Length: 585
Image (cartoon, rainbow, N blue to C red):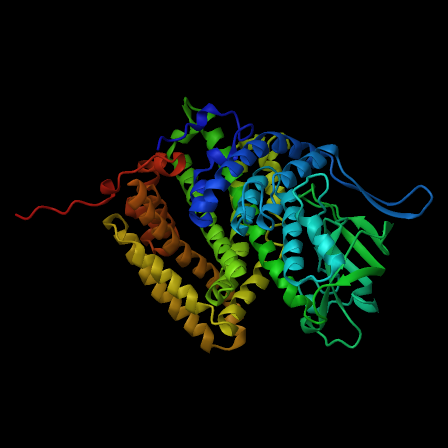
């Protein structure tokens, strides 16, 4: 495959994001499956063009003219009206009309069956190249649809589900989830909102929700406690709380919108539920369990937005480095810049591979009810969200540095991408909360079993001599990871919690290294291309190898020798990576 000449672009817009992101295209092909991918490829190519042009331009306008809340009308009556810029409405019509939510739930035109959830995540990835903030309501719409599809019963909830999954960009409704309360934060079990039964599946909810993104969604899911229900998450029930009921405003007050650093395209605010109508979803006191299904998809959507921010910022950095001249040469020709771009590209490759593999496992669990997939998902998903969110912040920050002063001003997209990235470590659980979730998955659900089996299977798949040294390093780390998990399983709870984030990062590094190896072997077999072997080698070298004198004395010239392969996608002959054994005397 010919390398990409980034010097022919002015910046990372007015391009087709699907066409330019070969890493993304590879992962979509891998996790979607041959039959589904044949249909998906054209859909994603078309959407990548729309996002790279119209939606990307609109997103900059929306960032300057974000939503405005009009809580009261001129007569002082509550109206809870959120005013949006017309460009946001256009983006919504384009995204929902392209099937970004519906196609994973209802068969799209030309198909007999819905697409897998990985296709929904792929569409979100492309959207996040332009507007990660808008991906928030899109992902919550899909999450609410998932919950109602699985647990919603009765005509009322079915009608909301149909509205969430319609492919008509003018007729669809959006979803949201109101979890956070001021006194609880990440401690969802501290929820104080009360739900009183009225009749049938109808309840009245009273309480305050403190951080409500997509505040005016018509299909909002909220947790509340019925009278005499036990404390903690076990006592929570789940309700659908509409914006309007029978054509009239629901009994709630949209108090104010948060003045946020980023994600301006999605309105986030505070809501007082004042006897608001809510329709119970499923059974009482099982709400938190139902909501975790939505939360798992939300966390992967968060990871998808993170890796897309990495992709967009990397694209901007590549284009700038290819065009910007300093001291007589494009800055991509200088060794330090080569190293920076190589390592940013490798991080992006790793994060995309891990995220879409976690999405594939989640989809397998939802489609097949596979117990091993469920247990593997329980450890992969929180790590995907935690690790990629931090990587997005770091990548956006350094891309801004590569662009210099331009990257720091609003005229250039790295400014917005960094602001949008900063919320991703917070949304859907902070890194501490997620690390503790990993411990629970390992302890209560024996998630280590399918995890270790998958890593070993990936290692066993790597057979080409070009992968041998990298495989050996990961094999050693794999053994150490098993020891680490066994150690924490026998230590007291305080020590296990103290080391939880180290363990989560270790799992990411070993799992991702093995995944890149297996993918590299597949690329060698199918395309006789060892580019991904270099990506795996660099990732493992930086994450899993110890180096004397911080590598300074090791003679590492990787970035100089393999810049075109890693950064510009130049193909690599596998045999060139195999050292020739010296001839016998």
